[in-house]
Image (cartoon, rainbow, N blue to C red; front, side, top):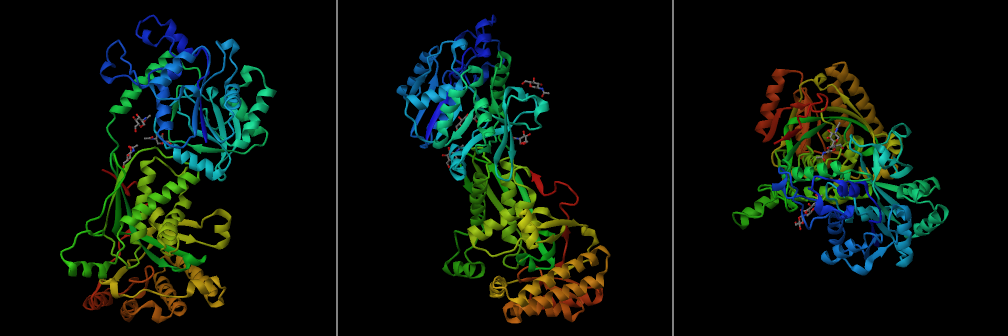
Length: 637
Ligand SMILES: *[C@@H]1O[C@H](CO)[C@@H](O)[C@H](O)[C@H]1NC(C)=O
Ligand SMILES: *[C@@H]1O[C@H](CO)[C@@H](O)[C@H](O)[C@H]1NC(C)=O
Ligand SMILES: *[C@@H]1O[C@H](CO)[C@@H](O)[C@H](O)[C@H]1NC(C)=O
Ligand SMILES: *[C@@H]1O[C@H](CO)[C@@H](O)[C@H](O)[C@H]1NC(C)=O
């Protein structure tokens, strides 16, 4: 790939105002081309009347730092005009830019200017460029670093031309920019408007001169310059707009940065920009962000979520996983002292811990989530700011009892990353977020799971979910409908205290389902039916009916999976519950059960029996996050 920086414009309004300024503050900047104007002032001088500009931080240096620091480009060229050539030559020598790579377009003033697209065409022709290219205007500037690698990853992934865009600041007019309309599902730019009036488009997505063009697009550039010979038609915006109108495929990638100093900016805009850059540097570092995600209980319908069924589940307030993200000079994942042990009391201590807890701490969950997050953003045209962070986690969700502890850590990490990189549901729509979490587990960690846990941990509260094949094929996700959590009767929760010998469930249900086994397919339909009935029972507060349905749910599970595969301890918990007239069914894949007991006296006896057999039992405390619409989950420290 080749990079071409364009700085061939003439008579910028800014340069003229600097020339005419009578205050004497800007004499050092007279005749300096816009791209070589200082990008910083020394902060101690900001209050006085005389500006103290930084000598080595020029606007162009910001680009050069970004481009040269990566070994991504075979060559970087700079195209300028005859008038300003010497300035750039001097800059190149001082900044280790190869002088032979400066192209002179021969123009000396605005009247004989050849236009930006012609300057590009000249560079391609005179340097025999026959490669993919990245083109940027070197006289604009970004306010937040981003990763060129990630941008080029997206370009390679899409194998098509790419325009960079950003959200125009509220204050800025569309009439100075190229504005695009984009189809968010394909990432394709459907309309490119050069400097449109506000009534011409509702879009405020602006394109700076910052494009990746495929080798195969280069002939269109000379075709265009042959067709349009007036300098006024030879802006990048006109060319891109023509290209899109010709039916050419152009993708968009959104950068987190705002772009400044675009178009005909004047001296006052420049000075206020450079002053605000001091303020930005002085701003205290971003605060740490902590996000909590709660454990979940599958109330009804599970495990049909993995089989195009329907389920209802809820978040519980007693158990949660919390992840904290902090800005950091290095990217760092912090070990959890208990869950990721690296030091032991003795060899027998190591033996005991490993036997009980295995080798699967939480660190791999953080790492896998970060990896997938980058991957998701890179393949969906979301560029991330280049900044480092540290992640740490804390959790009190009992391990290996099917309360979705791993998925809670992943969900919290994901929510932290979203906040840290300032992404919203516009970038990753909420109904797609559970699938993201599931992909981390299935594709990175080879955990087999259904969507239910991730849906409830993203939505929170009590949610009815429909995973019908038809829905998922049509919209890419199920239907997730929040329910009133206060409609629920009091529930209890019991779980094994020593999950290491609860036995793993080995079952062939998934294979049978994939193979079209009629019993399994019918069973999953029955789960969905039970769920619909339970939804009615909850809404009408028909507690007896709900109790029956929970039992029916378990009985159906037992029939499909067989008692042996469900494990002895799990079966024991169910039978203790049933013995006292309570309903009892698995919360997830085993290890914990949820039940509904209508008789207080019997419930007391039941709890005694659970406890004397070594199970842990408690009242279940539903956690209603989403329906209250509060920000309870996000505690900003
Ligand atoms: C980009 O990062 C470099 C070093 O990492 C820093 O010097 C520069 O100020 C940053 N630029 C912006 C616009 O944040
Ligand atoms: C627009 O920006 C200018 C400076 O860039 C600022 O002084 C002004 O307050 C802004 N106006 C609004 C409505 O934000
Ligand atoms: C991120 O951290 C690495 C070291 O871990 C460092 O080399 C790099 O410069 C940092 N990047 C930023 C933008 O601070
Ligand atoms: C985050 O994004 C919103 C809108 O997308 C924007 O208004 C806000 O300024 C951004 N915040 C930061 C810190 O970039």
